[in-house]
Image (cartoon, rainbow, N blue to C red; front, side, top):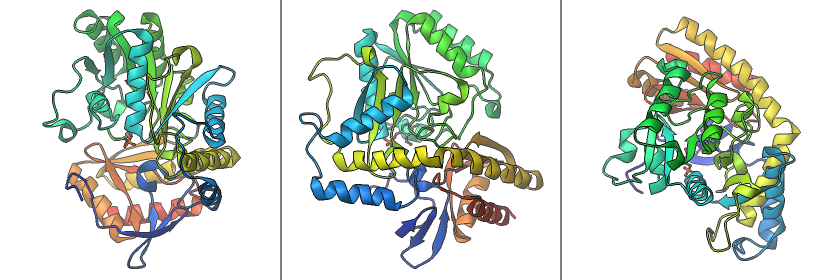
Length: 396
Ligand SMILES: Cc1ncc(COP(=O)(O)O)c(C=O)c1O
């Protein structure tokens, strides 16, 4: 295996069920990672497994680029109804988050005829060359990969956790427009409504509405990267709904098919009007992945989004209680089941992840010194309490 991976501890998975994962030695762990915020409906949800089996028995692949099949069309219709209700939309299915971002970058250029992009410091949009040009989370992700796309500009991401205000970010955007990136040359602004890999950073409430206003004023497309924050994780189907903002393009992946590789970007029909041949993918929208996506949508609409909001609030309260008695915790933040604890130093964060592992809880870091909590949306209050006990004990 490539040594480029960043495994923090030796967890070797044998099987999983809901929020629980068992390793090859038979040890059972509470999983607060959900495979990096992917298994929305828990490990191997019986309804998702049944949908996969049913589709796989009929056929596994045909390619939506050249042919038709119902699971892909139905999932596109379900996403359209959820993301742009009442507005005709178009959907392009991919195999990953990075591919959804790449596609959105191409679409934004095609639609606007403009060359440039703006993204934010701390952003993570993926690792392919286009997406990596937007990514500005860790130097290790970009080191020795230049030259990247030349027409990408970055502004600071506003968040109380870093002491950056919306006013400062807006001033920086105006400065970019006035100096290196005239607004009429900017195709799109890419933004994670809550930064994920960058540290689970929540922006001030006025940021996304003001960004929407600014982009509309200049005819710049607003692309919401909801790869990590979407699919109900924050207690709404999309995180942008917390701020009542409607982006031009939405990118999804991770949780969309409960673990099968699938991504998508969705735009209003008039903005995705590129001709046949301009974009395609052999595997994107694979029928088995789309069947898993449909079962995932059913489960989200049957109560998992509300569950994420409800149990997420309980979990966040518990984390705040822990922070009050553990001075090495410097911040608690997030929405729904997209939560983080920030520690004093990267070493404190790594130690917490390690000792939680030794106590039967799977965690991952985010940013430099945050520990993210991104369990499956099926987490119940009892499981949340178990996780909190382990976190408190690991910090002790
Ligand atoms: C917000 C966001 N965008 C894009 C990506 C890239 O997704 P993938 O790893 O599926 O290419 C990620 C992955 O962590 C992400 O968190």
